[in-house]
Each structure stands twice: as C-alpha cells, then as structure tokens.
Amino acid sequence: MADRGIYQDFVVTRSDRLLRTAYLLTHDWASAEDLLQESLAKAWFAWARVEEPEAYVRKVLVTTYTSWWRRRWRRELPSDDLPDTPASDPVSDDRDALWRAVGRLPARQRAVVVLRVDETMVKELHR
Image 1 (cartoon, one colour):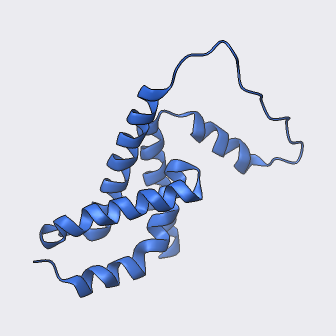
Image 2 (image 1 turned 180 degrees about the horizontal axis):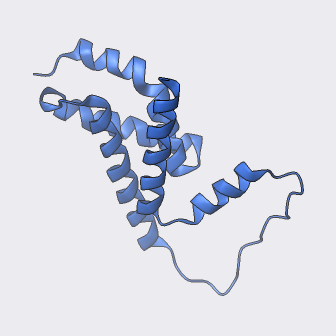
Image 3 (image 1 turned 120 degrees about the vertical axis):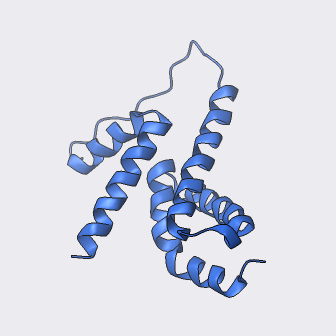
C-alpha cells in the first residue's frame, strides 16, 4: 500500500509547479486544475511502484491531456460559419505572439514544447 504521508507531501510541495505545466498544456487555469487533479488521482493508484514521482506525474499530465484533446476533437463538427476573430492588440508583446504560436501546435507537439520549456526553467532556477 502506498504511503499516504509521502504522497501528501509530494502534492503539497509540487502542485504549484505541476499546475503551471498543466496550464501550459491547456491555456486555461480551470482546465489546468482539473487536469492536475485527475493526474494526481491516477498517480495515487500507482504510487507504490513510482520511482520518480514528478516525472511520473508529468507523464500522466501529458497523456491525460492528450486523451482529453482526442475526445474533444472527435466531438467537433464542421461549420460554414467562422468564429469572430479578436481585434489585433497593438500592445501585444513577443510573449503573446509566442503563446499564439504554441497554441496552434498540435497537442502532442505542444506537450513536447511545454515539457522542454519547463525543464529549461527548472535548470535556470537551480543555477
């Protein structure tokens, strides 16, 4: 049986960082919270055999997000009406342009970029 105390410590200490990763995948805080909660619940059931908890939960985040994306994609129906496009924001900076570019990537490619960026940020923080 998994040690509940170790799991709870992991959740308390790593949730903020994992939530940021989930947000980078979903681009929506509410969806990111749902994604993280579902991923942590899945991790609980495998906790006794997990050797690298953070890496494991990150993988669960990505695979869960990918399955969400696939389900949502199947429900979309083609339409002759195009959605309204937002007016261009003259104040938008490079970060906004980057987010839009990342948002256009397919889900699996976005997951790779998010994990790579997150890994780079971790290395920078530990310098």
